[in-house]
Picture 1: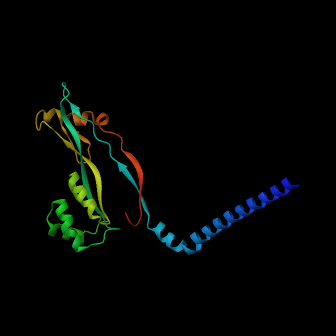
Picture 2: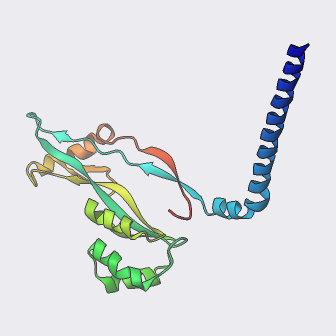
Picture 3: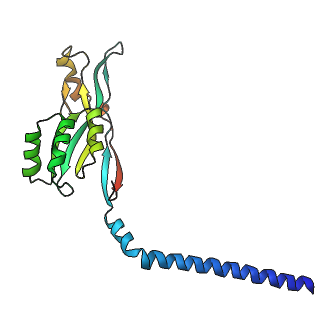
Length: 196
C-alpha cells in the first residue's frame, strides 16, 4: 500500500512539473507574439536577401617550363546601390580617400547619378577594399573580382592574347582555350539585417 501511495505522489509531482513546463512555454510564446511581436516584425522586415555570385578565377597559362605567362589576381570593384545609399557629405571625403579618387568628382557623382546601380571604381586592391568596408556606408558595396596579369609583360603577347573586363578571352590563347581556362561561378544567397 505504501508503495502505491509513493507512486501516486511521484506521479502527481511529475504532472505538476509538466504543467509548469507547459505554462512556461505558453508564457514565452505569448511574450514573443504579443509583447515583442511588433518589434520583431520590424526587424525581420529590415532583412534583405540577394543572390551573390562567387567568382571563379581564370586558370593560368603556362609555358613549357611551368612559368606563368598569364595569371589572375584578386581585386575588388566598388559600386553604389541607390535604393540603400543616402547621400552624406561627411562620408564622401573618407570614401574618396579610400578609392584614391578626387573628392569633388566623387561628390558630384554620388549627388547627381540617378541610376539604381553604378560603379564607383573597378580594380581596387585589398587594402582599399578593407578601408571601404570599414566605413560601413549603407548602399556602397565591395564586390570581389579578379584582374588578369601578365608577369612577363609583352613577351609572347601576340600568342598569349588577352581577356576583357568580363574575364572572357578576346585574343590568342586566352580566346582559343577560353572554355578550359574559365572556371564555373558559384551562386549563394547573402542576407543582411539592419545592422549589416
